[in-house]
Length: 198
Ligand code: CO
Image (cartoon, rainbow, N blue to C red):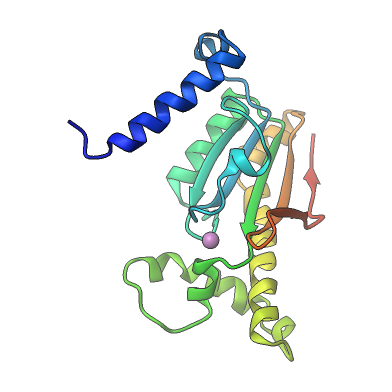
């Protein structure tokens, strides 16, 4: 007997409600996935990919990690990206940060949180690359700016992967988008960093 019975009950309710609306929903979805979108976002529980863009299962291929970072040598993230681009042929890769990000917050301090501090070095690097832009800002402005600059840096990192470069070289239709989500009002902002190739 599971100690998380309430979650199984919620699951049953959820699956039942979908089947009431569309009896073939899961049968159809089980045959294939053909998402147009790949989402790279923060692990934060308040930033669930599908719900934010109001899309059902089957529409978004998702990778999440703390502070939505795309590290040049992260085989996990790169494998998800490669499968999305080469096999699923997604048309759009969205990197979505969020204001109020604990990872960004932690990267702006010298507090120690353990192993994750090493991961957040990548965000500290983004701060260092852009240090002058933070002059004269208050703490909240600094935080918001680093959230945005971090997304822009990851758009650059995605665009420079062999996966994306080769897709563009092969003439594939593929765009990289940089967004920030506001956890205070549920609204997405496009950072206008769209990169397309092909
Ligand atoms: Co976060």
